[in-house]
Image (tube, rainbow, N blue to C red; front, side):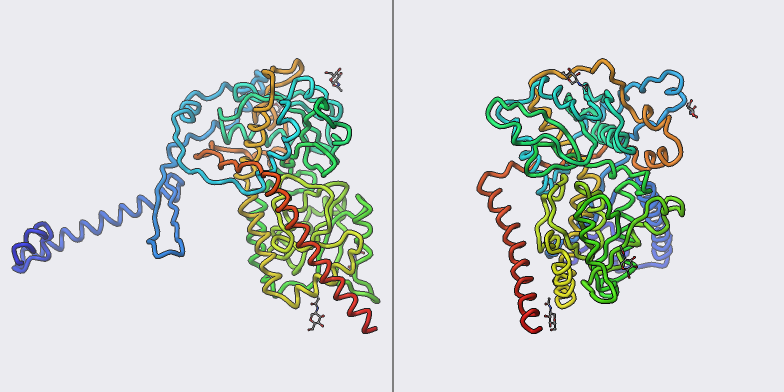
Length: 517
Ligand SMILES: *[C@@H]1O[C@H](CO)[C@@H](O)[C@H](O)[C@H]1NC(C)=O
Ligand SMILES: *[C@@H]1O[C@H](CO)[C@@H](O)[C@H](O)[C@H]1NC(C)=O
Ligand SMILES: *[C@@H]1O[C@H](CO)[C@@H](O)[C@H](O)[C@H]1NC(C)=O
Ligand SMILES: *[C@@H]1O[C@H](CO)[C@@H](O)[C@H](O)[C@H]1NC(C)=O
């Protein structure tokens, strides 16, 4: 036994029995050296972590497994070159692509690979009309009727041909977003040719394009509806909405997360809040009838957003993170889908969602009673009154809805997934093209310099805030397969079912109340 012991711990001197003074001193010396070395080692690691060279992720599962610490060597990911406006001003030419970067991307074997969120499945649905026929150049050309610009990607470089100016900076920041996508996934996007319309409402009506020879023109825009074939794409606000001082999405998510911590749900005002511009749509004007008065209280607190006034006082009253102080938040469409939806859903307060006609790229992934509470379009006030009262009676359930929508928005709609959605949509779209795209005659080459060097003030500030500085260190998430007809029907039936359930509860509530009177 003793022999085994000595054999095993031959080198661990402190376990030996005949401990002499000399050995004790040498032990102390060694221990001090070891401790110092260890200290320096940890300091070194801390400095690396702080400087972002090492990324330590601690996975703590609920299982009995020990936490795993994985260290990925981020230092290898090259930074993209900073914008060179001096050179661009002189030559008006985009810089050459960086050979080091391309080599890195080619040799890089990314290992992280995760399934995309469910709402990515709708990419297949949006492109379904061209699945049999493919997309010809003629079809794309015909989409020029309302398009604001045509964007072409060839060998990883983007070119844009502008047709007409869009409202505000919608076109500018949408194009900026695509340019960032190319920096996020350099060399990974296929050649393609697309038409983009920056206006609100869909224009490619399904009823005009029926039958096998219908050849609908593929047109990208921010929203669509069930009667249209427009292909939905993330809107400009993900890279910032300068005119209303709404920062790029990644920054706003952080601010709202912080804002949510400020007021606990139970301490929030127990009413339904909305702030916006009611004059853009009849349905919003109709909502105003539900505001509290001396005589009636529908549990709604509605406010008018005066952008002109706000812009003069520096948007102090319109900070999104300060708008999470009510227990319930109302979402209602404007002239079409509204950019405000993601900000409203991120508040940790249940969203009372007035029946929508339009959808954007992510809303189709949401389920009533799980991510939001449905509100009738045709009977808004009574519907709101019931919803708020129900929530105040069932606080646990109400909070769960608020948490679920925040999680959906903060996790499944984070900027990384927005880029993944764009990547997959464009990738699937490009597969359908039956011709080799070419650079349009009046196109200019796009690079951040083309857009940012001439942009001043806030325009430049918002661009710099959303500039992609280094390519992504992993592949895009894995695209889910298309819905089969049965699964799609089941999904839609569930949605309708939950909405009907709430409507039945409402009916019962109001019938009882009316009987009492
Ligand atoms: C580039 O040119 C624009 C307009 O001529 C000017 O405003 C800007 O300061 C220049 N930028 C640089 C970096 O020289
Ligand atoms: C759209 O394309 C058609 C056919 O390619 C062309 O004749 C027409 O001039 C274009 N219209 C616009 C507004 O660019
Ligand atoms: C709704 O009522 C509140 C409280 O009386 C008021 O401050 C607000 O201005 C009203 N909103 C509208 C749109 O009238
Ligand atoms: C909320 O609770 C009160 C008191 O129990 C009840 O009278 C009311 O009908 C409930 N309202 C809803 C919507 O559940």
